[in-house]
Image (cartoon, rainbow, N blue to C red; front, side):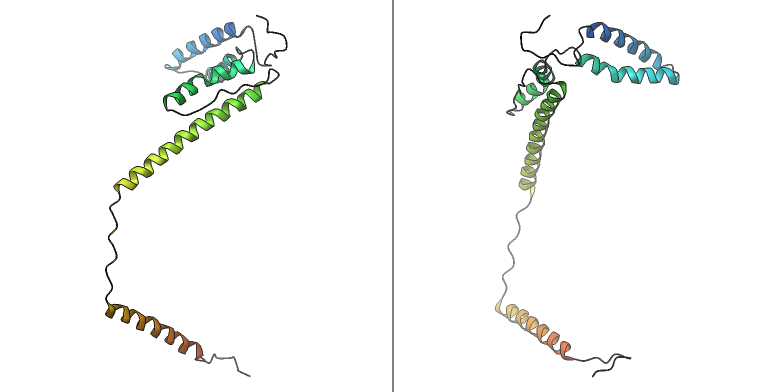
Length: 176
């Protein structure tokens, strides 16, 4: 299928992605069935390589950056709508590459995750506030207790002034 005039095709696009996906998926399934009985180290490495390769092959199905964004954000935007989060579907220029598309997807997903986290923290704080018992008022201080506190503070200040004026002789140090 040809793109309209002026549209830029992603550098990762592969028109044969479906046949590559089918072949890699079939090989991975065969190795996973044999994995239960034990694989050699070479087969384990091939299985790991296939598991990392499948998302790359799948991403090769998208021809334009906006098509890639629409597909990648479809589930995230549905969840955002369900949670009443106002997320957006970014649109990039036709000349955008895969890196710009991935950055736009990451930005929207990060915003959704941050909003969910913020709401969870607000809910936790609200629950914590509602479970705290009210603080008792301080006991009333009588005039007698106030006078004792004042005398103690003044006495402590007087004692500290008296100790500052004391000169304690230190051995080996002479005053001039």
